[in-house]
Figure 1 (tube, helix red, strand yellow):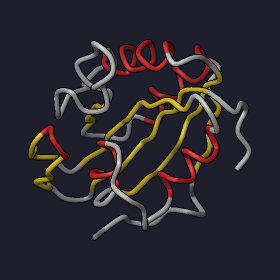
Figure 2: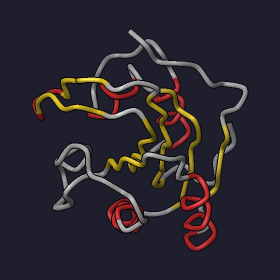
Figure 3: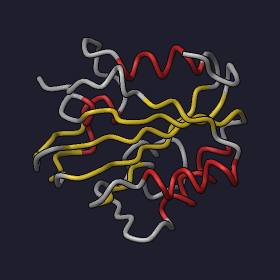
Length: 152
């Protein structure tokens, strides 16, 4: 993988093929509908390593997103070179996309005032995220050759 910067913000598009009831660490258990989830995160050092970690099937559960990735299929990754404050800006922009729903309050946002950094879309939001990509100069890494389910 070739990412623009060593630090930055990233956006994961995850497909969940069936409805799941998932316990997300201390946040509690939530119902996740089949569809697409967009997660916004940041890496203040080694962005590439962070993305590669999300791609791995076997890993220690550390972040909220790790719980969802056990059941979802990572479809696309967008990256944005920038400071951590861009994470909340990008999250708000995604939350304002038509049909975006917050499936779990506090998901990925325990270190900021955002309601969530995870959004549900019933249909693939890639075209909307691509529009943000152009506006925010995001780079896209499509994982067509690396698609794999993250089932337990």
